[in-house]
Amino acid sequence: MMDYTKEEKERFMREALKEAHIALKLEEIPIGCVIVKDGEIIGRGHNAREELQRAVMHAEIMAIEEANSQTSSWRLLDATLFVTIEPCVMCSGAIGLARIPQVVFGATNQKFGAAGSLYDILTDERLNHRVAVESGILEEECAQMMQEFFRNRRKK
Image 1 (tube, one colour):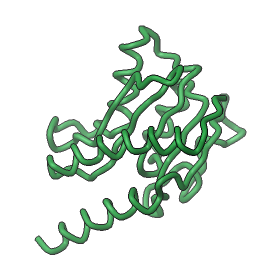
Image 2: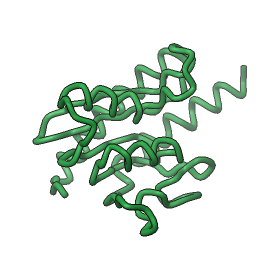
Image 3: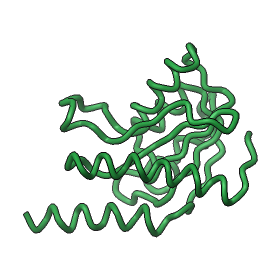
Image 4: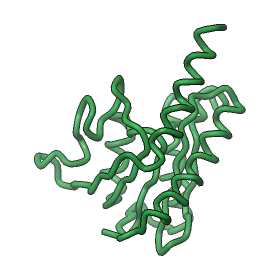
């Protein structure tokens, strides 16, 4: 597991927030993700289901795909995934399958979260891969973007 300073965690979460802003501009649910290895971002992603018309194009999936391509490996053993909102069931499964050892997320997702809110897939001892999870990095900024998105969507 990689040790990051508070400043490093916030810097990488700000990069994930940049990805969330891309999703927001595309009128997607504003979730962003980056994957970091050896202090460098090796994968980026944002929600793109509407843009690409593919149900699985969540931020984490897109970032994992890019990181796999960058490393020429499906195993992301020495990487950390930073995501603005707690991963869902699908993304938590993909994180485990990619063997990512560490996830840092901003805000919880009470309706779909699978990293402690609704389910706890990433640390479930019945599974063969467990992930160290940290939450609350730039939590307010991450949550606010989602709240504003859904508030505006309800107005429409």
